[in-house]
Every structure is written in structure tokens, then in C-alpha cells.
Image 1 (cartoon, rainbow, N blue to C red):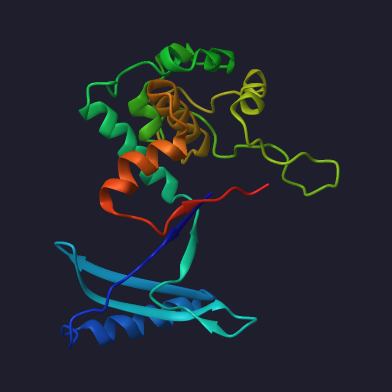
Image 2 (image 1 turned 60 degrees about the horizontal axis):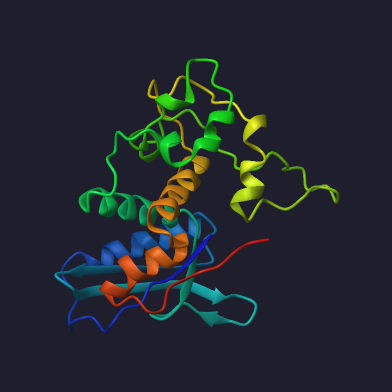
Length: 218
């Protein structure tokens, strides 16, 4: 999971018309959805126009959200992964129509009753149309004997012979966590860098992002 900081510099004096009605609606939505803490930031051309904070960073301690609060953002990693893949496309390291098995031959072990896993492309992974189901781990009951979700590629690869695509790749769309895990693996295979290192060196560092980091759940 990714932990990203939403950091804002002071906004210009005097908020634009319509900002207060927006923040009231923002707060009402957050309260109605039982959100503990949230923030919103508006930027243009690298300049902060407005920001607003709601609720608590730590409700037990009474610490409120401010401009330096770090939020736990899970699937923002999908955005980072997609940007990294498109960056490699622009650098002529891959094409979106490349076969995924060219980079991850282990995926041929996945059962595909509709055809061949060689038909799955990078474009399909990016668009959630490759047929991989959403869960990344089948053990969800919380029983004491259940293993933790895999944290290493070799653990995940060992599960591939026991997986099956849910529909013919490219035929429709279904939100997929595994698809983006495979994209991250392609990034690693192409660049020789761990996924987190590639994102830091090629996305965050050039943008001056210094308060964001990757964390790992067990």
C-alpha cells in the first residue's frame, strides 16, 4: 500500500468565490460518510490556490488534520504504476500492445478457458480488461491459520497455477488489483529496479516530492 503526503503551501489571501460553499459541501459529505479526516487542495501551474482540512489525523489524541498530514492512500499506486508504464512507453522500452507473457512468462500457468494467456497485453492490464479477478489473495475469513497476503513475487508466482481468468481477455472490464501487480513486475523486469525505487527516481524525485513513501501491510 502507498502512503502519500498531501502537502500544501499557504494559499493566496482571499479565497475565490464559491470556495466556502464547496468546503461546506465537502465537510457535509465527509461527515455523512463517517470520514475521520480529509483534505482538499486546488493547484494551478504549480501554485496553490486554496486548501481545506476536515476532521482528525488522530481522533484519539485530538490531533486535527493540517497541511502536513500524511494520508494512507491505497490504490493511488495504480496511478503511479500507469504513469510509470506510459513513461517507459514514451522511452521506447515497451509498447502497450506487447504481450504480458513476454515479460512475465509465469502467467502462462494461469488457466484461461477462453484462449491463451499469450493474448493478454499491457493495454488490457492498464484498462482492467485482462480478465483477472479483483482479489489478490483468496484467504479472507480472518482465521488464525490463514497466511498473510504475499509480499514477494515468488510467493505470488507460486499461486498462479491455481488462478483462472474470469472472462475472455479484452472482452469487458472488471476492476483488478492483480493486473497492476503484474504491471509493476513488468517495470521491474524492464528496468532492473525495484518498483518503489523506479517510482522514486523517475516520478517523485523529478517532481520534488520528498514527504511521500511506500509502506507495507503484513
